[in-house]
Image (tube, rainbow, N blue to C red):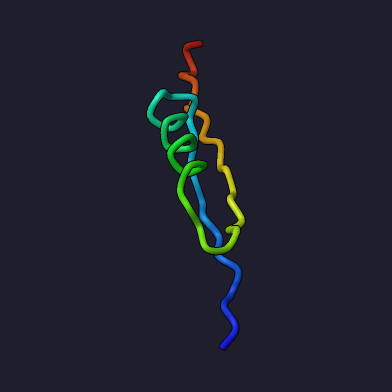
Length: 49
């Protein structure tokens, strides 16, 4: 049976936690190379701005 290509979705928001998540993910040993998709989340700016 053939394995499907694995995909990992990572949300990033310019926080230290999201940067640490990307660093952690880059060091994980995978048996096959997964496709990593980074989804950048932007906080909404108040209308008063």
